[in-house]
Image (cartoon, rainbow, N blue to C red; front, side, top):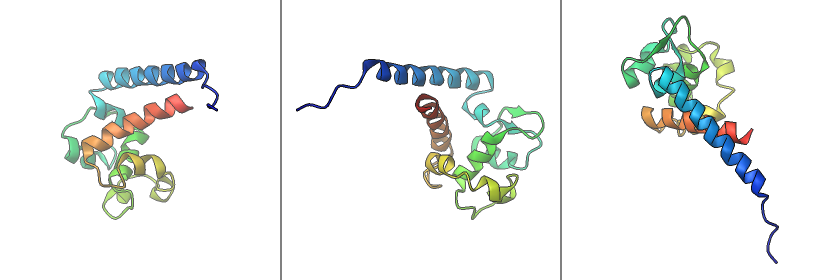
Length: 130
C-alpha cells in the first residue's frame, strides 16, 4: 500500500513562498549594498568594528542599526566566550534567542561568509514555512 499522495497545491504553495521570499531577500540585499546590507549594521553600534573585521567596509544604517548585526555576532560567538556579549545590547536577552544564530553559524564554526549566506537562507526558509 502506498502512502496517500501529497496535495500538489501544498507543495506549489510552499515552493512559491520560498521563491518569493528569495526574491525579496535578493531585492533588499541589492538595495543595501549586497548581502551584508541585510545585517543593517548601525554606524553608531558597538558591533560595527567586529562585522567590518570580517567583511571590510559594509553599507551602514544610520544610528544603531537593527537586529541582524546582533544575530550575526551571536552566530559567530554563540557561546559568548569572545567579545560579542560586550558588543550587543542586553546580551542575557539576546543569547536566549539562540537557535537561528546557532544554526546559521554552525555552532560558531562556520566562516563569516558561510554564516552570512546561511542567515539569509534560513530567513528564506522561515518565510516558506510560516
